[in-house]
Image (spheres, rainbow, N blue to C red):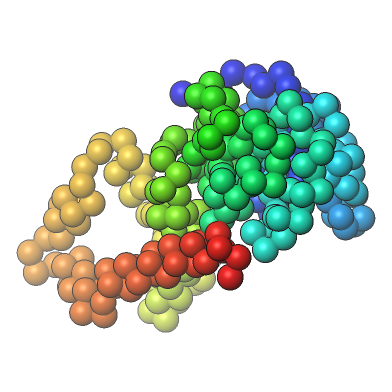
Length: 274
């Protein structure tokens, strides 16, 4: 379900890749007018680029961007979020504060903001830039169900959004937040293997990208279990079962399990300031 237009003001604190992806996606979806968006970005060259690309207001400081904002989206790295939130704490009254910083809990943000300021924690991912993002949304103690739903609907407009209990955020971050890098690694590995077998890089990558895209859509639209798809493709004595056997022998499943566990641990470490 796509959201209706958002008539409020949106302030984005941080003009990095994720902040840019969200702004780009919202504008492309027609959910927010450019005139209703302001971005805080400390680097002048980056401010100029964002202003030129999106025709939005830009500011060097967060306090300058949040004036009259209804939603304040904090899109900075976890390592500096405490400093940023404390700087904004006196300027966000009446706004919903949304954080996309990995590992940072609603309670931690609430402790640095005036009592009663609603906080919503979101873990999006970069495919939001092309309208295919995946966002995990969790509300803090002061956030009402309607406020959580408003934030979820904004992210739903640039892909999909799921409201979950905050205790599952670290696990979700390890799958969808970090997931685009996993898939890019798989695609690059497949493409390189294709090149070693004589394909051009262009053709090998196109094959890998489209195959992954089609498989993802197939799983999504049919609802079948991944194992069922594997069995359907693996003819007895054929090429696929030979490849799957080789992957299993190399411990691919275990490697992904270790990768997700490592990402979960790091998310928790970021939340405690380590």
